[in-house]
Image (cartoon, rainbow, N blue to C red):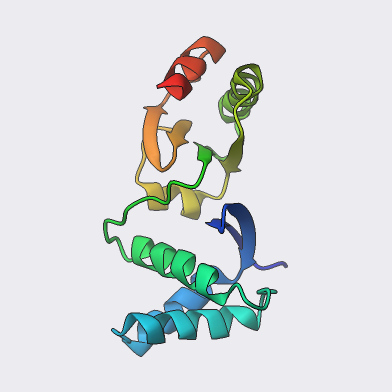
Length: 159
């Protein structure tokens, strides 16, 4: 069975990382408070499971530290590098229909955006959004519990 892959925005690109939850749990157990040491530990441990390009350690470190803080439940400021749309839902017809409509709206608006459909229930639970499907733009919940029309999605994305 493969490792869980978590997608993070690093340097303006979505990057898939294996074993992020495991590494965060290991680092949390170390009880490190110094940010630089924390970043170094995360990078070193993730580097054993993932390819981290030479010279990008600082970019990765910043993004990973932000995500680590988020997983601890801390309020963190969202990275504003581009538009990230997330659909939360396990893959029922409503969730899949919302994803199709989001893709249509993004295409019709000609918006450069990363659209991610999160289907893993553990990952969905981290957002604390009920009911699903849920529609998030740059980390903010825009709708929950219904399948928006393409027109409604376009209106929300145009704000």
